[in-house]
Image: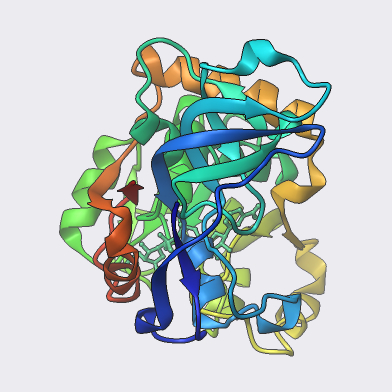
Length: 320
Ligand SMILES: NC(=O)c1ccc[n+]([C@@H]2O[C@H](COP(=O)([O-])OP(=O)(O)OC[C@H]3O[C@@H](n4cnc5c(N)ncnc54)[C@H](OP(=O)(O)O)[C@@H]3O)[C@@H](O)[C@H]2O)c1
């Protein structure tokens, strides 16, 4: 089968399409013939080498979510899975392939009416958004700022916060056009990447969901209201400066909090239940899969180039 590997970390040209052996499922696993493969921001972060300290090594097949048809079940597994269309989490890699392997606990049946392309656009992003808001103890009536809202996690956070009754949903984004699209999805205030640009926006927020990190993170700690909570969900701009926590200490009397959030800390059963519910919400039109472009698997490096150039609104999807 064809697979995409990272031969060199850094530039997208370090990715190559290779022939790899077709996988066999171990007990507790299934093999899925892929129909759609999500190109996540995390794939780009890993490929750039930003997470070099986290044990990723050359030869890694990127991609963490796919959708397609189950073709085989590991020994002792429930054979009735064969033939079903599912969404699957493949881990921090393993997705950019024609035949993917996933644990039985990491697959969710797609409801009628949801395409594989839409499933891999929402499947991981919308659950990250949901549980990040839970982690931030977001409550209806509170104000929310989504930093880095133009990616698939940010878009889902905007939609979920708006639907859950946020008093304001501000976003940071790099262009007015993106701002307009985010308003259509529920944003009430559009800010530039520095968090400026709308005098009517709240000065501070009860909750900030930060997908960007990087050098700009400390300034956003100042945008937390008293008792406000900033949850770092992603690091698309890299890690923040080592002393960023001093910003919190400097505003001690504001009782602000910073947390990280990873979906890895949520029980698979809880994630699956929320994901299945979100897929149904998408079929009902209450949650939107924003697909930037669909490209063939061979053009994975091109997809990553577009990610690096900042051209992607929502998510690129690969098809084998
Ligand atoms: N916590 C978890 O469980 C979990 C799970 C999966 C992924 N992740 C993380 O989430 C991140 C990817 O999320 P995603 O796919 O939604 O993001 P993304 O599409 O890669 O980026 C989101 C947006 O951030 C903005 N941005 C990019 N560079 C920036 C910069 N230097 N300064 C300010 N804004 C910048 C861009 O929008 P504008 O150009 O409009 O500003 C971009 O569209 C990765 O860091 C990944 O590791 C976390």
